[in-house]
Image (cartoon, rainbow, N blue to C red; front, side, top):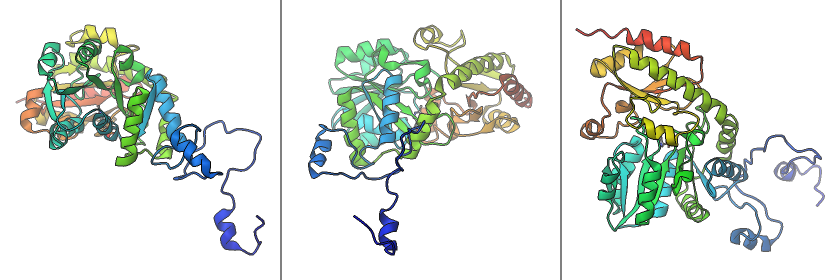
Length: 398
Ligand SMILES: Cc1ncc(COP(=O)(O)O)c(C=O)c1O
């Protein structure tokens, strides 16, 4: 339709809605910052809703940038399909809700990211779903905790913040025998270090805020598994509203292009820092699966490939005062309550990620006041090691 050149209102609203005509393609997929999509024909609405034609309707339900990211992570994790979310917690809570109903039961590791722990311990119980926390490093305890109502075994590949490594093949076998879903938070490992689905897991969740994005500029999450599971979890995403923004999906996809390079550096730097920390007289203990003295080092060698991850934690002499002294004396390394960016950062789990846990639970699981968690970055590691050494040397014991 020809529009009158003086009709500013119509021009302003309808002109330049589509990309300009071009025989060339953009090198990088554009950001589809569109909350909704136009149809040419009424019959196509049925076709897209019913899945007989591919198309997008509304970005809370799906969006091209989200699809590109989901496809990428599903491939990296060797899964059939994926669903991206507004945060790691949205991916975790939606995935759990997709697999259970009132009256069901979940068995979860006693050491988990504090947010996941609180959701399981407080919020799920309020929905009439019972949760038993047990020690997943002892598979007999896991078996003992299973009841006829159990539907999910929930664990982190490498636990936050104690770096326990889950025996995924053994847990997958138990899940199979009892008809349960093994759900694994693979955030600390990333798909570069471990592929839980290849080891028998049913569902893998990630805080994409961490290694997948890798640059501390996005909050996001993703869950991958069978197409059946993903269809169900997408229904929950659509109705509970935990969708990711197209720009965030675009940024995470850009971050993933260098995941393998970043992870290689994170892993090799973390091993060097763990080795140096474990020699320091003011360090009581270092938790890193790459160290021979780590209780699951053998298992880690079997199931972690390409390295042992970029996360470690350690306890210092002097309790919380000792930890505060080290953290405050660090010059290059910042105190940052997240992880997996390119810069080395520290955090105090007791005061941040595990703050919501009672002192009783923290003490029982080993999240002590003297524990410092390190997200090892990709800088020149000798400089980072020197910073930790000078900071640790400030601890003086009376
Ligand atoms: C292991 C792990 N899983 C899940 C989450 C939650 O992710 P998000 O902060 O993106 O919701 C975190 C956050 O720190 C985490 O460390």
